[in-house]
Amino acid sequence: MQIVYGSSESLTLEQAATWSPPENSGGHRGRYLWTDAFGVLNFLTLYKETGDQKYITLADRLIETVHSVLGYDRGGKVRLPGASAQNPLAGGLRIGKVDKKGPDGDGQYHHYLTIWMFALNRMSIASGKPSYNDQAIALAKAIHPHFFLDVKSHEPRMVWKITMDMSRPLVTSEGNLDAVDGYVVFSLLAATAGDPTCLAGEIADYQRVIDRKGKHTISSDMLDLGMSLWIAHWGSPGQISAQQMGARCLERFDNLDHQEVFGEYPHTRLAFRDFGASLGLRCYAGENAEYDRLAEKLRGNWDAFLQYQPEELQPISQVMWAAALIPGGESPTTSYVHKKAKYRNQHS
Image (cartoon, rainbow, N blue to C red; front, side, top):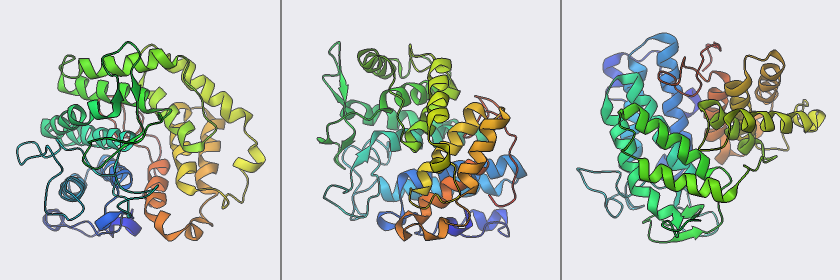
């Protein structure tokens, strides 16, 4: 966290209130939505671990900065279409890609937006302020229809990536996790709001996509596998059994080439994807000593190699490393990344 956001240990609460996040998240104008979402979650875990209110303040400052950068066009002068001072997230949030166009250009990803909604939801719970969850619900309502094709049909489809202004799809293939991810996160937002009807229509749309796709595909991709476990540990996404989904993910882990995946030389892979797998393992099966050992091995094997990851991947890798180290939290209503706090480390 210090590598990305600077040292915060010596900051007073008053200094935290005027803190500006360094432009160091690896994205356009220094902000990248996925990295900063986990940055918020890690600040909340630090608050949970230390009880120091300044970490709530730092999370708030990071949220404000992300909205002021990724909620605007790339010039930084104009809000995204549909957004206003009254509803600043009505235009969604940009990914924060460095390039404006091209195969890896800027736009909006569904799975980045839902993890940001989750971060806002956890901030609402940690701070006791409903306004953050209200923002997440506003964002959910704004982006939802733009990621669907034939949303009113019996078999709607989703798209993986849309333009910055949400006017059209950029990648029309479906993300493996987008529907179950949306179902679970939107359900958490509604539960926190105490209003099961507030996102009922959107949740029903995700349910129809889940029904159309049938049995959830368990990927061998490490990040996809880890995030599948993270989703499963929150409960059943629609009609998919969380227990069955989690068990199939663990079976896939068991069938991996352990010498390759858990060996001492992971540097041929991408670190942040392994950290996502480690986080998912700890969230879903961390009380199992063997899976907890494997999760720590996935994370710890990178300690000697993380510095050799490409420079542009250092921020996302460092923040995901911290999240995998200490998922944090105690229950579905008070947790940040993980439902049970049992991991302690002073280096987070």
